[in-house]
Amino acid sequence: MDSRPAPSARSQAEFQRSPRGTLTQPPLRSDLRTPWADAGLGSPGGPAEPGDGALGHYLRAIRAHVVLIVAVTLAALVGAVAWHQLRTPSYEASADMLVNPLSSDDPTFLGLPFVRDTGDPTRTLQTAATLIDSPRAAALAAKRLGRGWTARRVETAVDVSPQGQSSIVEVTAHADGAGDAARVANRYVQAVLDSRTAELRPLIDRAVADTRAQLSRAPRGSVGAQTLADRVRQLENVRDGDPTLSISQPASPPDTPSGLGLGPVLAIALLAGLALGTLAALGLDLVRPRRLADEEELLTLYRLPVLARIPTLPRRWSKQAKDSPLAIPPLVREGFRTLQVQLELQPGRHRSILVTSASSADGKTTSAVNFALELVGAGQKVVLLDLDLRKPDVGPALEVSPRMDVTELLDPKTRLEDALVEVPGIAGLSVLPITEGDGFPILERLTARLPEMVSEALAVADYVIIDTAPLGEVSDALKMTSGVDDVLVVARLNNTRRANFEAMRDLLERTRHTPTGLVVIGTSPRVVSSYYYYGYGRSDSPVASG
Image 1 (cartoon, rainbow, N blue to C red):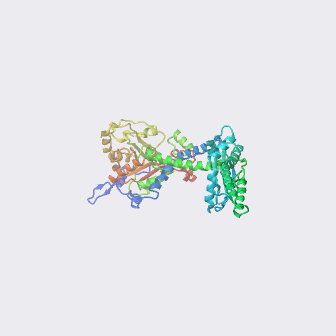
Image 2: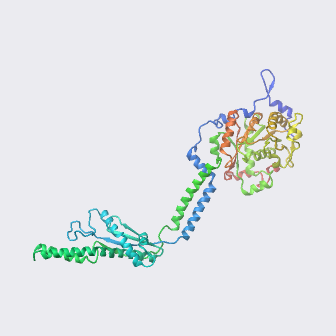
Image 3: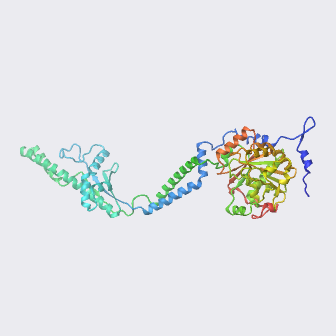
């Protein structure tokens, strides 16, 4: 038996007695502040939530485009591996040259371009490095290296670098082969010594000749003659080489190629990929319409209570839901059951519920259908009205067709009950399916008749659920909010456009309508416990079992 009170008794209970003794209908739920709003959760003008601002925007953009960032990072890693495998290996070999500078006050080699001690070891070593890194040495080394080598190529392949506070200048050669690198380095340092010898010999010969001329004029056996004779001997001793430069350590062929190994290359590629992926995500977030990526951002924009969280379904359940639209997966059913319980526990009437959203494809029609199915599964009678004249999807979702054209429904003589269609296999669910409306006049007339339609529906059912157009895109549902007890806003993470959500919020604020709360779709299913399966099998239909 139906334990519900008769429509007439129920209708009487929903009216209040005025001071004059007449019955007046209580104010509709959607025109009042919700208890959550009184507690500070529903005030759109409340303080900003944490995470707002530039950093919050960056984090939301990253979360919204995680797949893009991962793809760019993987591409960078693959590219790094390919480059490492395909690049031509380069080898380095180094030879060391010892610098032995002359004393700055040594008169023996006065006037000759030898390396002298300046008192600053670093400066002295830099001077020696300048002499070693010479075009003349590069040309001589290229000649000795043979075919294919030029002075320019040798200069490119060789680096000369002083080694800190030591007396060593390192000559490093780069080549495609280990043996070639050592050969170039050794040829170059030998060319440095030989070119220095060739450069200094004429100067030394001239100095020897001048000193001998002075010696011939000096008295025999005098101290001056002895000093000049010593200088001649020392000059002749350095005629075949620069005494300030020598090879300390010849180059040996290296065992491994130079450059970074695969590990460091992958580390750099990982960092570069993450950086590029993040920049791409931020750029895409700026170019494309910005979508709300998480619940925190929703509440920052509009501080409404979240009455239900509907997780993203695993692939297996998504396929089952497509094959059998009337079977609600356990995760989804629990979300709408939580919504039902919250509405029932709040004071006031909660029997007519309007469902809207900010953007298209947010899931408002699916939410309206699933909420209706949950209520039916809980033993309630439900009338589901499809008042989205621009895109009526309730009928196709439940596989029912309209009994009459929408224009017939506008006739005051037409009873709503005559237009309702029973859903096959779902006892207790009646639907008003419609076809697309013909312009604004029909919408205005249908909106004007909404209170009457709601009253007629509540006369035969416990709940009336109304599916409307997205309020953030068109204002069709705005006038309808005055004729219902509750307004539910459906938002789908990574789909709801921020601009549409703000437009919807502004419309509701300006018309002083505070929605009862949010239904958020797209949360992570990982937070859902297996406890939700208690009482029925994973593959059972809650509607069928209820």
